[in-house]
Image 1 (cartoon, helix red, strand yellow):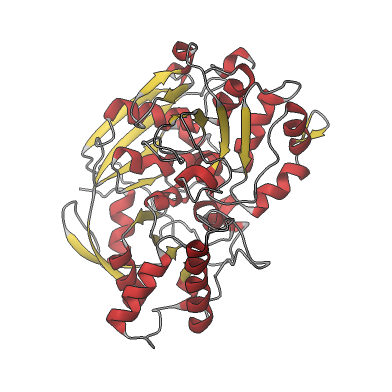
Image 2 (tube, rainbow, N blue to C red):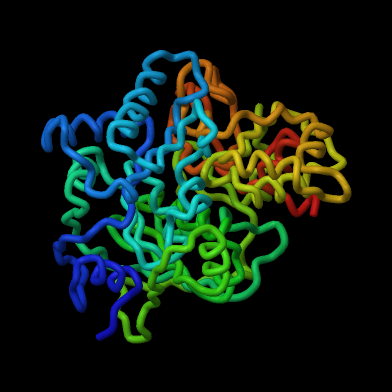
Length: 432
């Protein structure tokens, strides 16, 4: 019996020829990521258990990316960043992306692949549930808690249970107006928020192969919203072009065997997919955007690791070009690189930034997680009342973007932009 791509990567990382679902194995970490929310807790546990003067297992493999609560007047948030900064300096960590310095990048889940920290066949642990994003380049990537992260920080390894794999085959050509966000929301809507609990969600098929890495990141990012341990897409030429342009380090690509055993297999026809939204207050409350046209919105939000990449802003600009928004529309680039490209990329002879300004959007915020996780009261885009927000983010639980009285509707950048123009949930195909 063959193995799935997830099982092959974990076998390599554990020094074994093969592993099977349900086995508990020690795996070696290739990357450990933490940020300003979980970093201080991880550092505190590491120093308590390993000693104040203990050294991390490998400075090159520890990445610290403050990104959640950084552009704020909140002193406790500043102290969190300070703890990370002091630790990085004491440890001599080369990969600390300081929000107060020239190295700052932005949201961790976009920063890591942009900076070449994500490579096929590797194991990536992060103190953030959406670490599964990095399965987009054919890696095993998963979120862990502070205690586990502190152990990895000291030893470079972690005991995990091998997840069973669920295979999602999407063949065909995605219709106009349908993005990776629609694809993953449709899957989550079909199987529910617990439908893939502690399982690997493996995505394949001709429609997946046609996706750029940025869209694959969106799909894998939201595996956790179905309870998945990880999301993963096997590396191909698209992957290699992206990864090799950002790192010179070697890596090994893996693919599932033809006779690999799966927990389940689901097949979707790409042509059957339509723009969808996830209604409050759960990512699995999925409905066709066209069926929700009577739902009014108060604001639109385009940003986050799921919806703040360059391709996401290009998609939004396609809808907003030559039009005006009817509601307050917030823009939050995921990284400094993305923010630069808002001025550097043009559509119809105008930069993306010019298109957004002419459409009446708010000026883009500094790259960060911003309101995706609520944040302090002065967080850009945070909800403060009973607003209904259509957002390109990945969660819509009560209070997720600030006020518990607000309602968050999840959507693709195309759908969010179309809805911003009309002031109601709108199928972007009305404008495409």
